[in-house]
Length: 441
Image (cartoon, rainbow, N blue to C red; front, side, top):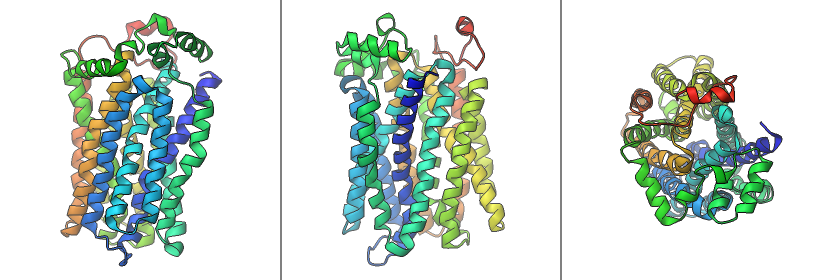
C-alpha cells in the first residue's frame, strides 16, 4: 500500500475509534447509571434507550450511505462525527431519562452513518488484494475505542459519576474533525460525478487509483434518481438473493455486537459476578475484538471473507453457550476474551463479503444498506436484553444470542451460493494482477 493510502486508513481508523468509544460508553456506564437512584433508570427503560440508539444508527446508516455520492464522503463523515459528539454532550448534562434518550438517539445517527462511509473510503483507496486486511485493521479501532470507554468508565464513574464518561465523548469533535478536514481526500468517483474531473484525475493519480474516466465510477449513482436506481439494483434479479442474505447476516451480527456491548456487564452480574469484574469483562471482550479483527482480516486475505465470516459466527455461538456456564473468574476472563475474537469480526467480515460482491457503482449504497438493515438486529437486541433481565430471565441471554450466531453463519454461507453474474474479485495475497480475472469470489 502507498503511504498516502495508509494515511487514509489511519484517518478512518481514528474516526472509527471514537465511534467505538461513544457506542461502548453506554454499556460501561450503565451499571453505575442503574445504581444511581436519583436518575431513575431501570433495566427495561435502559434497554429501550439502547434500542433508540440503534434506531438512530439504522437511520444514519441508510441515509448517509446514500448521501455520500451526492454530497461527498468527507463532508458526510465529518457531519457524523459532529453528530455523535453532540449527542454525548447532551447525555452528559441530561436532567431526565427522556433527555438522555434523545441524546443517545442523536448519537446513534452519527454512529450509524460513520462506519459505512469509512468502509467505502477504505475499500476505494486500498488495493483490492488488501481490502479484507484493511477492513480488519479499520474495525480494530472500534474495539480500541470500546476498551478506552470501559477504562474511562472504570476510572471516572465510581468516583466522579457516570456523566463524566459521556462528557469524554465530546472529544471527537475537537480531535478528529480538524484532521479529517485537513488530510482526508475526497473520492475520485464522487469528484468525477460532480463534474470536478480534473481534481478527480489528480486524486486518483496521487493515490494510485484507476482513472475514474475509465470505469463505472460514481456518475451512475449521483443524484436522487441515481440513488434510487442503485437501491433498485441491490434488490434486482441479479443481486436480490445475495442482498437479502447479507442483510440477514448483518442483522444477526449486529444483534450480537450491540446486545453484548450493552448488556454483557449486566448478564455477568446476573450470573453472580461482582460489579467491578462484570465491567472488566467488557474490556476483555473488546481486547479479543481487536485481536479478532486483525486475525480475521489476515485469514480472509488468503481464504476469502465468506468462509471466515461463516466460521467466526459458528465459533461465536459455541463461546456464548460456554459463557452461560458459571466458571472461576480467571477462566471466565479468558473465555470472554476468546468470545470477542469471533464475535465482533464475524459481523465485520459481512461488510468485507459485501464489499467484494458489489461492483464499484453499487459499493457505497450496498455497504450502507447492509449496515443499515443490519441495524434492525441492533435495534432489537438492547430491548431484548432489557426484557430478559427485567423479567428475571438473565440466564437466557447467552443462549438467545448464540442462536443469532448460528443463523448468521447459515446466511453468510448461502449468500455465496446464490450469487448471480460477475462480482468484484477477492484476491488472496500473492496472486498476480494478471491472474485476478480467473478467480471468483
